[in-house]
Amino acid sequence: MGLDTIKVYFDGNCGLCSKEINYYKKIDKKNTFDWINIYNDDTDLNKFGITKPEALMELHALDKDGKMHKGVDSFILIWKNLSLLWRVLGIIVSFFPVYITAKFIYKKFAIQRFNKLGYCEIKSTNLS
Image (tube, rainbow, N blue to C red; front, side, top):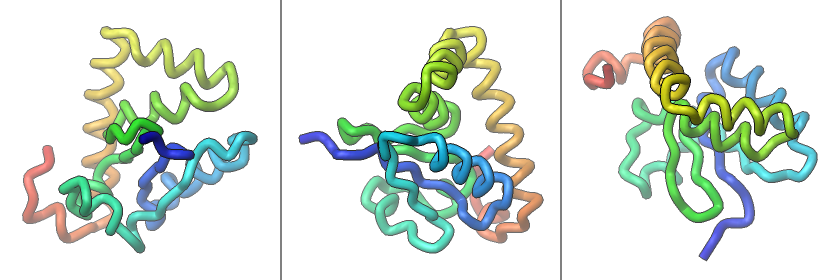
């Protein structure tokens, strides 16, 4: 049984994250997404065994088939469900060399952003 929308779980406490999500909300003319601020409510992710620190570290998205995506895969899912220009970006980032590079860069960025925000949970969890 499929979902009506793609659920995107984002860190609403991060200014950069919120700015980007607000942009996506504005261009999502078909209301394809359900945007969930997991800084305030992570109960959905608990059902998938995803801890709050893991969820705050990297973007997560649940596709309409019920498959969970994480990090770059979440962005690809979002981009492929927006306008043509974004779909093309999603396809390009899906290609192996670009995909591997994007995953590496995103992981490094996510760790740096997370530590900069000073979330204490990451200190006791090895997510690198």
